[in-house]
Image 1 (cartoon, rainbow, N blue to C red):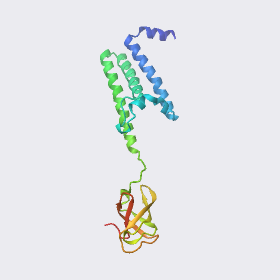
Image 2: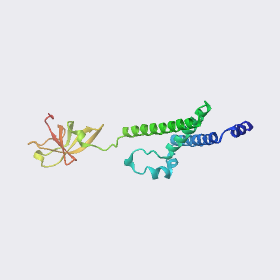
Image 3: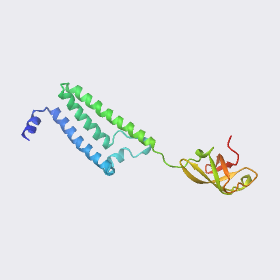
Image 4: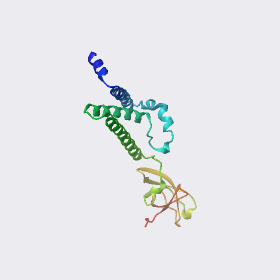
Length: 195
């Protein structure tokens, strides 16, 4: 303990400030890491992130609690490392700020890419055009009424409303081909393959 006190007293004010930033940032970073692994990081973000990034359409925000903790942690440690190898205080601070900023930008980029990988799961009927299905309920001729078809779309078997323009009723079990979408919710089907 005496040795730590000695080191602290020998350090310049700038080094002391950087040590405090690096250590406090590291403690908060570890807390965030543990809470993330155990599903409790919603409390850690708290109101600080909610106020800054409440607009979901704005993408990932620069000024969140996690990003600030990351920046100050990397800024503190990088600046201290630069000072310890004999770089000037100004260059050490510039390099520390660059390292902190680079890490925050990298994290924002990675999280935006991860978010892009998610899909909403909302069925997009236009994805059914050109697919083959099977009539589940008879489909009346000449668009006289709705029937039902089973179509495997977006990785799942869906039961969807369908109409057809042909002159004959399409019976249950018949193979159908999705030709178009009507009113964004009804499939236009045919027994003839789509050309």
